Length: 286
Length: 321
Image 1 (cartoon, one colour):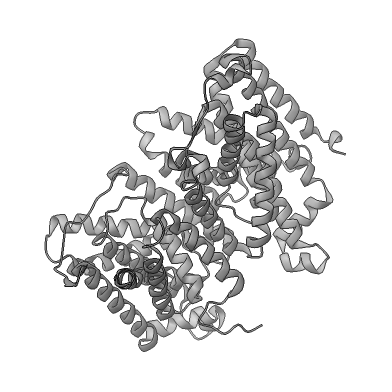
Image 2: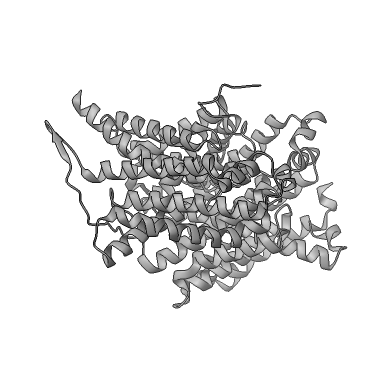
């Protein structure tokens, strides 16, 4: 019984990183109605970003999150300009395919550089031991970092003027433009923040597990599950839903093989989409 | 009438030439090249039924091909069925699976459906990799003696080639048949405006589930034939996400929503890919080039090659569908 508890605590810690990744997806989706399919490859880039930075500066890996966040913002602006800017206002199919095309290019370049063999970031924080179970410092630090970034985003969205502009554009783009908000700037900013969140979550994951350039796909799927669980445009909801998914994974892993998890997640995804189209935190209205 | 359409005859001539030329020249390497082209055309044509006709992006179309391969190989090797009935049975089984799945996930609209298809791919792959009768992650093998029943390996390879070409021709004819039918008109209505289609009396749920299931049939048959020819199948080659994506690139390149466009894109892209794979400098950048191509087409030429042709020669619309 205590084994399940330990596994669930582990799941809870990892779940907050899933939540962070999903916040990036959810922000972009909610603000500009674009499903960002570069999400998975950006998570993978975040992992390799951490790998490269840590190799160059072997300090505490969690301090390296800051440069990764900044690089993520810049990368986000580039991806926005390449793939999203031109298709804003066209059908959802266009942005789905254009972000997907960029995803293929990133994966292609990544494969050419790093092949698809596994890498890891060799950094450990000391954890603590309770009875037969050890909680590693990395899990705790990653979860803490994820929660801090999530709270920072929440403060930014609800306590600053640019944050308010993002929420205004998400609510009603035309009305926001009439109020003098440049929607292009706001969309680019929201997209950049979304990408930075994805990259930082990848960086956090890289301190927990070995990874390849293709690892992002699995986390992308988890982000979709979390996003539909939480409903769109609710950053803290996404964090909570991520923790929930982590808990669920932690609760089932002692009983079944890990390779079944995609099947469970997919089942959850479809059931939630069909049964609660607005997320589990909203009461269904018509 | 489908027989009055010039494209119908073009398809038949094209398929006949593709079958006859390598056989006449007895050129095995040309046959191996062309069979890949035919598979690309089959995948792109059937994907077109979803993306081009109905406006629903299916990222996991390869699931049908892989599952067809598994069902076909299982029946042909473990149950000792003949190749042709095994392939047809694979098509039927996978279509029924798609129908049931479609009834569930096609309640999702637009982008949500697209996301669910990624999930379908991951879920099916993880299921098959854990499924004992199908050999888990090691997969299934065709015993060499199985080819004896078809009159030896050499004969068997030519036979599967002709069958694949036949499936290719059927795929294109199916696309054409649906395009000129009332059913096709209903699909186009869904693509343009699903709510309006409902108001006009199109039973969208049934239409979508049927086309999803129909788009599964021929890829599954082709999968059974192709993996039988290759002699083995395992979860990573059967459900190669990459191939699923390349299908979308092919379709967008040729021109979604047109019969010829899907085939043209499939053929051209497959040629490009084999060139890239064999070129020493570019072999690592196949994915980058495919992605770049897709991006350029989506941003600047959403109609693809055929859309470009239509703008250049408007009368081509009448002949090239």
